[in-house]
Image 1 (cartoon, rainbow, N blue to C red):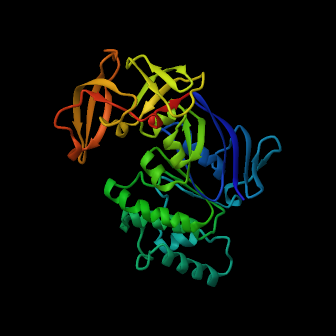
Image 2: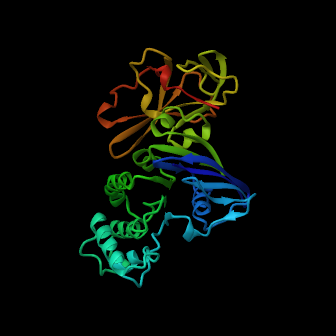
Image 3: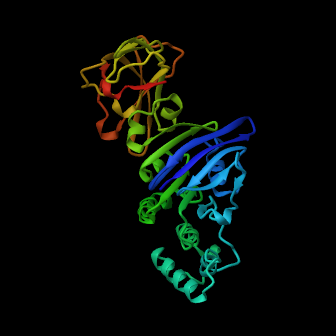
Length: 346
C-alpha cells in the first residue's frame, strides 16, 4: 500500500503543486525554506486544506476536492512531528504519551501500550519528567513516542533536527534512521539539508518554489540530479551554462572549454555541473589548462579555486575540494574530469 498525493494550493507568490507517491520506507522532501515542503505535510495531515486535488493513503481517500471528501485530522491515521515537537509543557512524558491513546477506552490497554512505547523509545526513568527537563534528543523521542503509540499508517517529520545543535544532530541521525526503519510503513521527512536527506532517506523528492522537480532513489539523485535547481540543492558547487555540440559533447562558454560526457546530451541542455570532489590532475579525459585563484580552509578539507585558461573574467572561479593531506605542493598546470562526472542539467 502507499500514499498518493496530487494537490494544488495557492501560497502567496506561487502555487504549490505536489504530485508524488510514497511507498514503504523513508521518502525525503528536500528544498529551500519557503518552497512549500511543510505546507505539503500540513495538507496531508489535514491541518491545511488544498485548493484542488486528491490525497489517498492505503486505498482510502483522505481528501478529494472534486468529490468533496475532506477527512478531519483525527480520522486520517497520520502521525505528524512538528519542528518544535509540540509536547504539552504542563504534562509529564507519560501524560504526553497517553494523549496519543485517547481513542483507546481500556485504561489497562492504554497503560500497557504506554509502557511498551517508553521501553521502545528508551525513555525509562523519564516518565514523570516534563518537557523542560528533557534534553533535545529526549524531547524528540518523547514526541515520537506520543505519535507512534497510536500506530499511525503514515509518519511525517518536519525538519526533525532543526531544534538541535550540530553535535546532537549528528549523534541522533543514525538513531532516528534505525527507528524509522523499524516503523515499517511510509515515512515522509521534510528537510533543507542535503546531508540529512542523503543519510536518512531511500528516496528524495526535490521541491523548489512549490514545484516537485523530480523524485528519485537517493543515490541516483546525487549521481544525476537532472536540473540546475536539484543540482544546487544536492550541493553541486560548479554549475555553468552549456550547449550541446555533439551526441556526447558540450561546450561551456564561460569556462572556454568543450567537455566529453558519458551520458547522451539532449537538445534542451541548459547547463552542466561538476561536483568539487571530482577534479583530478591525473584524469586523462577532459583536460584543461588552469591557474590557481585562491583557497578556503575547512576543518578537514581545502577548497582550491582555479580558473581555466580561457575562462570569462566575469564568471566565478571553479571549486576543487580535497582532503588537507592531499594538497599538491605545486598547483597543477592542467586538471581533468572523468566524463561520467559531468552532470547534464535541463
